[in-house]
Image (cartoon, rainbow, N blue to C red; front, side, top):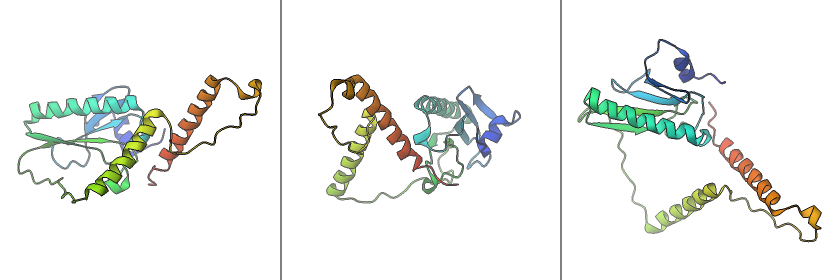
Length: 188
């Protein structure tokens, strides 16, 4: 397993953890923006969101929600920010996915707001269409790579069953998705 600053903290028996299980660990951030800042990380170091198994993501979000509720009760915060910085341009500094849960108070001096840009309806529609198509392809287990139709002159034995073809298509599709995701891994 690759070592990251987070795996070192996970392995440190004395480090301040608020939750541990076989998939995720929630611990105090070693460089908190405010007291009580917690990071929820997968036990295995997955560098970005796209490479993290769904089961682990679901568990991370469940624990982040529990941490947030505990912050309201025990730290008496009036809000929480729950943030994922996915990739270097988004501010990710460690090659290990994390969810930051940050307790907030009014006038605490933190500013995570941004000024939205005004886009035309046409610009919004183009973005929506492109994202909708990609999300649908991911849901169907396909990519935008078009496959050429096979020649129909094969005999029954050469063609194989449609189930075998479907299975091979799924395997190729999964490989394509993995390759797309590998291109997204930041270079630290």
